[in-house]
Length: 473
Image (cartoon, rainbow, N blue to C red; front, side, top):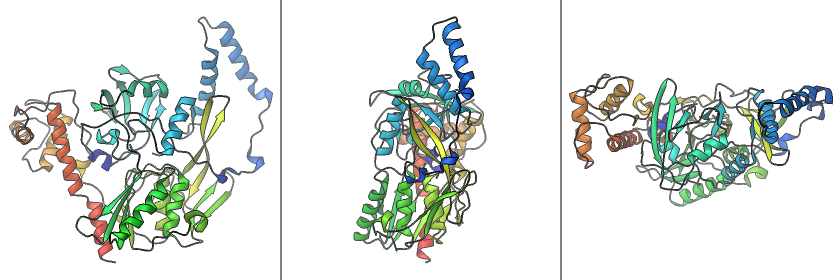
């Protein structure tokens, strides 16, 4: 349910990565579902007569054998799709099980959430940090056209998941479409990391604690508190909280972390249905158990900070905490999971959330107080492995390769694979004990992208601005 494409995912360009799948969506199941009885639409038998008539007609007259259970599931799925809400979707029992495993923090997959759009599987939000999907440079809105050469058109999420899954250590090839470009990634399957929070002292200033929140799952707030306490013991006097590429997860956990930074009684967020505000959540001991963070703190966000990450950013921004980066994703709706029949479930948008001042982030995101973005070379798509790029090749892919090489200090430019490109590639091959052919084969592509990844990490403009901001306080 969380969502747009972004820089940091592009950075993690290590290709000997791991991929396994998860058709995940986050959900919010709490007391906020208490809505007025008059908001429930009463449906009469007459309203469903046409549905029953069509079912009877197909099941009795269709030329081929009809799977009646599949027919019913198709009707339920179609009804959900008619809402034209990408966050509301019909789920099979298997898909629901995977969702619950993800929320609980234990799952296997490529670390990417999938949904169907135009009968094709689409990655609907940024992959989990340090997951196989992120390391393969997959991004939100990437369309999976093929898995190991087999087309995904018209297949269910369940079927696509089964195609991508496999034993740890085995390879899977995905044909990806990103905007107008198509490219292939070959990835080694593995287990998706489970920790949602990581922290350490800044390498240049051990009075600053750096904490990264990848997602909000059932244990995130506790993990965050534990790391804060640990870094305090190690000497941290201020903190940088990195919410970049955080796709959201459980909103209740995001509220709990927000409460750590707010005074008791401060508004964290407001929630409403289509008629009125039904809940105003406030910071307090009931949510944070009395734990507070009083040290100077700044927050990092990017275009893929979504949902719960946006709620946290909006809450602390209302109390004048610095927000550094670029506008966040812009997802201001809330979903719940309800059982339909014996084995099926529906994830349904049930309300919207708003910043403490009542403004919505839907479609516009949370604006930073200090803008800081990544360089353009960090946002380039992964290099396609469909060709063994060499002298004489040209086009957009070659222009991207030359841009990466130029960022690394090589004298390359333009959209032609020329002598300068060849010499730069040969040098990288020599550095990595590869045969210096000057042609970009798979291993050389991995080496090049890893070098760019390391360059991006060493030139993190937003993080540098965060450190500068803390030192100027």
